[in-house]
Image (tube, rainbow, N blue to C red; front, top):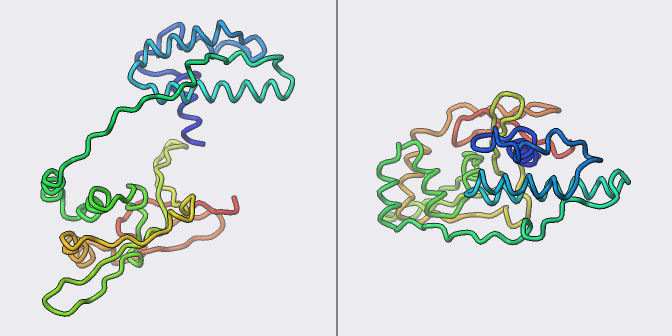
Amino acid sequence: MQNYRRVTRVRITHPYGPGAQDADVCSLRDIRLVDLTKADVYRWWDGVQRCYPEAKTVNQQAYKRLRAACAEAVERGILATNPVAIPKAGSKIEIKEKYLPTDGEIGAILAQVPARYRVLTSLVLHHGVRIGEAIALEVADVEVIPLPVPFLPRVTVTIRQNAQRITDGGGTHMLLQSPKTKAGNRTVPIMAADVPYFLDHLARFAPAEPTVIRQQIKGTHSTGLTPLEWTWANPGC
C-alpha cells in the first residue's frame, strides 16, 4: 500500500524533480475522473517519459495504477470505457543485467565495513539473504553448533520474518512481517570463512536486553541482532 501511494504521488498528484513544474506531467491532478480522456492520458504519459527517462519502472507502475483505477470506475459505471489504453506503456521493460561484485570485492567490503555491520553484510552479499530478512533476525535465529577442535563451530541462520521500512505518518520505523510464502521460511548455513564474524557479533554486539516491538493489540519483545524501532504487523488487521 505504501508503494501504491508513493508511486501515485510522485507521478500523478504531486510530481517531484524534473516533472514538478511540467504542465503535461501535472495535468491529470486537476481533471475530474468523469472528464478524463485518452488524449489526457497520452499527454501525461508523454510528459512522464520526457521528464523521467531513467525511471521506467516507476513510470510504468504509475500507468498501471491509473489504468486499474479507471477499470474500477468502468466496473462501477462511472466511466463508459477505460481511457487509459496505451499499448506500449504496459510492455515489458528490459532491465539491464546487474553488476555482481567479485569475491575479492566482497572481501574488501567486509574488511572495511564497521564490525557491528559485518554480519548483515555477510548475510546479504555472501548468502543471498534479503536486507529486510537480515535486519529482522533475532539472536534466537542464529544457531552455533560446536565441532571438535581444531574446527570452528558450524553456524546456521533461520529466516522466519522480514522487516520493511515504513515512512507514513511523518516518521520512520521498521515493520516486521512473516514471509509471504512458505519458501521464505528457511535455514541458511553460514560459510566457514564468515563464521568468525557471527561469533564476534554474538559476543560483542548482540543486545543485552530484548528489543521492544510495538503491536496494535499487545506489546511483545524479541532479542534482535540489531537495535531498531520496530512495529509488528498484526495478522488480524
